[in-house]
Length: 148
Image 1 (cartoon, rainbow, N blue to C red):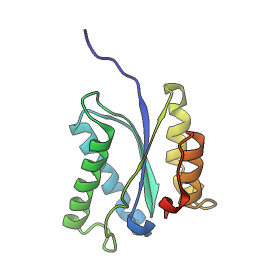
Image 2: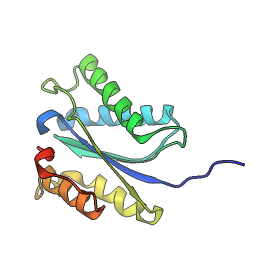
Image 3: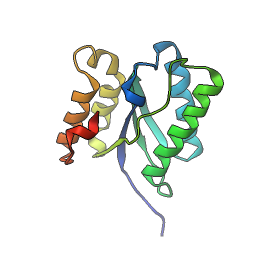
Image 4: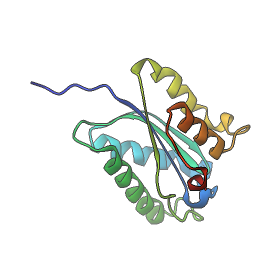
């Protein structure tokens, strides 16, 4: 029997100390690099976006890959890529931890648009407030002291 899944993930993680180091000029190269990483792991990228202090990745993760290991690989590989390419000169790494949220496939288009419009969205909302809202929407218990 074959394996069939349809799990839509939104993965969210931030720069170390939420520093605004991911300038817009280098984001396209970073996003392309992450897309290639996901392709190599047989994941399907629907959308990647973000602003200077965090990223959102909307993807389907291959059945043979644990989300935690995928995110670890993305963070490690992108740190090396950013350093080698001197892409973001002030970048010091990624904040420990991440958010991984699942959605029904019917939410895909809205989710893609949400990630696509991150720059507009963050003119009025800071990352911490957005992240708390995601945690609350998904009924994830958290202690605010761990959100920095």
